[in-house]
Length: 325
Image (cartoon, rainbow, N blue to C red):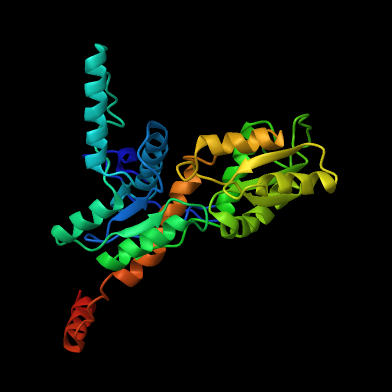
């Protein structure tokens, strides 16, 4: 209750309410101590207009999910190469006599993971925590582990498999008209898929891990789901043929990719090779940012110094003072 409702109260004073109860209450946010390591969202791609838009939105989601986290994105492409490419483009356009157009989103330098690690060491800050922006196994994780070993940093596991990724893929399928948004609603979609190939990038290991998310997705859709690797020739086509051999008449592709880790050309090639409709990549779906934040928070306690234990005499004095009060 606020004192604004009390007659004669000088100024309204907001009083804290009790925590909501029930199974659907939002869990309390863990407190991130001052001086905690930075979360580096490690992006397995260069900074292009498409990838920057996705990653910037995910960074905003992480900050909204847990405001105490210091988060920044680290890229493959260095700031120096970005500036060199911009200068080269400027010279080419100047020679052609055409006006030069700039984009404030992509023209500013974007730091690489290596640059962020060096900057933290030079500033005397704790080594950042590297969270790969990937839904499963990928060769990029090995690259990050090499960088982390040199800098004394920590690399977390990828974001999946996880039920929240199955939710994100389900939403993308429903947005494309390839699945019901809610299985409990009894209505038909003429274009709904009766079998789904969950496509991912990262080779056979990534496809095997995606199979776990595929089981969760199949439970949501009530249709068979098989996983395939976009970067393994013939993998997606073989998965589609398997679904058709088991009775699927309208198979569809569902990319279990966030976006930066795979090119749009590779996704398009899979669609053209199989003749199947495809949903959009997961992209900046909010649960991806939530997963990145929770992955960081899971490793954070092991990186923080243990709390100082109070001296026995000090603890006794504080207890006596509390009793007298």
